Structures are given as structure tokens and as C-alpha cells.
Image 1 (spheres, rainbow over the protein chains, first blue to last red):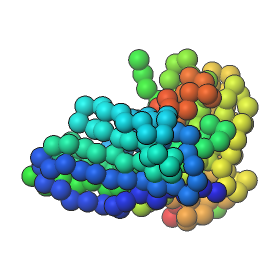
Image 2 (cartoon, chains in turn cyan, brown; image 1 turned 90 degrees about the vertical axis):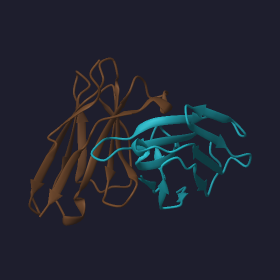
Image 3 (cartoon, each protein chain N blue to C red; image 1 turned 180 degrees about the vertical axis):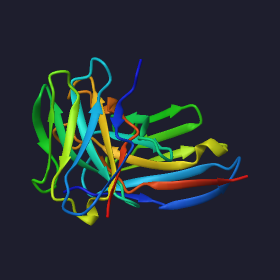
Image 4 (cartoon, one colour; image 1 turned 90 degrees about the horizontal axis):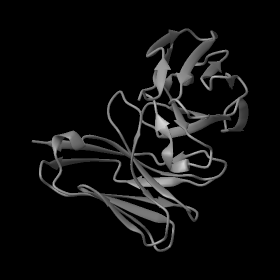
Length: 110
Length: 114
């Protein structure tokens, strides 16, 4: 089946820094979804991308659907402590099930 | 409006026992999805129910099963528990099975198998 590889696996950044993470797939995607999971909570949808080349923003977050349809990146500008959590990319795959990447754990130092 | 709710929050069982996890979707949502999140790993799709029927299942053994009730709430049953079943089990719901970007997740049930 398809695999989603996220990098980096984890990152420590200072408050105020910009963050970039990406996700690559072994197969072509029709949709890219980015979720954030806070400790003890379920994932929350941040951004959804539907077309190759699409660039979408949600506040300080920006995500792009790669031209090859096999990758996507998520940028967070001016990070703040509440950005801490695990960020997952996901694809809708087939038959309504989501396939999740392995996650990028973000930790912010003050 | 209430979100997706799951119970119990935590569940501790011993190997060989059975576990039952419950999920109530957002009002008006007919599709319920179950995912397993083992420690340090991403979410793995388990089961999808819509209108009371199992529509798809992930690559898990038959001892993982479930059902969806007429009120669209759902149960996940895990029989003959094994140590590696210890994980966070997440339930999600969506208003329809075609709205793939609108799966709303509950807080999860943490299952520990001793």
C-alpha cells in the first residue's frame, strides 16, 4: 500500500522562528490533509489541499500540494508555544479511510 | 454543538480479555471511523461504518470488530487482547462518507493491555 514519509520526525525550535515540514508519498495523491494532534486529544484538521500546485493559508500556517502530486509541505510562521504538538499529513486514499503519515513532533523552547 | 465523544477515557485489561470501546458521533453525522494509534506511530485505519453497515476495514485481524447502532453511535470490540493492542483508539465521524476532509476526531480511549 501507499506510504507517507514525514520529515523531520521531531524538531525543537525557538519561539518566533519559522517551521517547515514535509510529507512525501510513494504514489500520487488526490488530496493532502494536514492535521495537528495536541497531547491527549484527537487530531484536528488544519488545512486541506485538493489540486496539484495549490497553496493554501490558515492564519500562520501555509501548505502546498506539490506539482508531482507526491509531496506536500506545511510551514508555520512565527511559532508560539501553543504550536507544540504532532503534525500529521494524510491522504484520503480509497473508500473514505485516511492514511496518515508518521508525524512530525514540534516542540518550542521559550 | 457537542463534538465526538468516546468512553471510557482509559481502559486497562489483561492479555486474553475482551475490550469494548464506545463512540458517539457529532449529531447529524452518519459515518464513524475507528483508528489505532500505537505509541510513537501514526494513525492506522481500523474500521468504517456508515448507516449501520461496515463499509471498509483496515489490515487488522478479525478479533477487531465493531458495530454501529441505529442512533449512529458505534462500538469497537477487541477480543483475545494481546500486549501489542495497547494504543490510543480514536473515533472520528463525518456527515457523509464523501466528505473526506471533514472527519472530526474524538479525544480517544487509551487501552493498556497488561
